[in-house]
Amino acid sequence: MSEVSQKTYCDINELRSVLDGGSSCSLIDVREYPEYAAGRIPQARLIPLGEIEQRAGEIDRFRPVYLVCRTGRRSEEARQRLKALGFTEVYNVKGGFLAWEAAGFPVERDRHVPWSLERQVRFVVGILVSMSVLLSVFVAQPFVWIAGFIGAGLIFAAITDSCLMGMMLARLPWNRPKSTQGCLIEQERIN
Image 1 (spheres, helix red, strand yellow):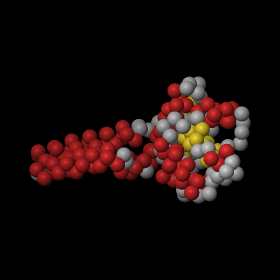
Image 2 (image 1 turned 90 degrees about the vertical axis):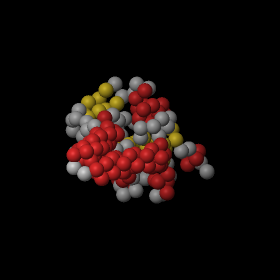
Image 3 (image 1 turned 90 degrees about the horizontal axis):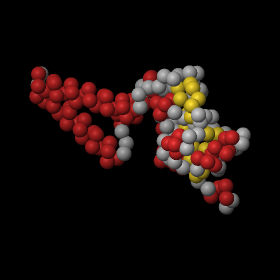
Image 4 (image 1 turned 60 degrees about the vertical axis):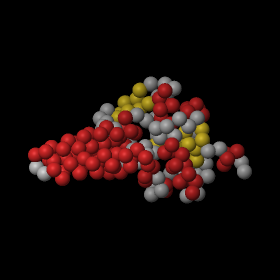
């Protein structure tokens, strides 16, 4: 096996060298749109992890593919999925966007960014629990079970490290790119 096919990751310094060197590659950000809009590596193209198989045809198989997410967990999952689809030169960016930003490398941000999905989940959960408590006090006591159901959902989300509500919120219009290409008009570059 060649060294290229054995290597599964690269660090942010290697990625920076590749990007600055003008090498022909694909840089794919596999986070959700609110995360991508809040800050991304310049030249990164958004293809969320949940869409990676369906949109794999948009990625050039003949160029190295670098995958980035917040810390490297989702991009490693995306790397494995692309390898299963026959991609040969796919790298997980170790440390992800957080490492890139911490190193002081250039970052692009959209001017109008939706709340993070975590913040949206906290907001919706707060509304649902408050409403169920108020309904149980002023309308009918069984409404308190809604709060219990939401609590059980939060426990399940913590144990499985997944969030059904977050996945559903990610599909709402304000959490989707305004352009089908993932290219956003109003952005600023921060160095």
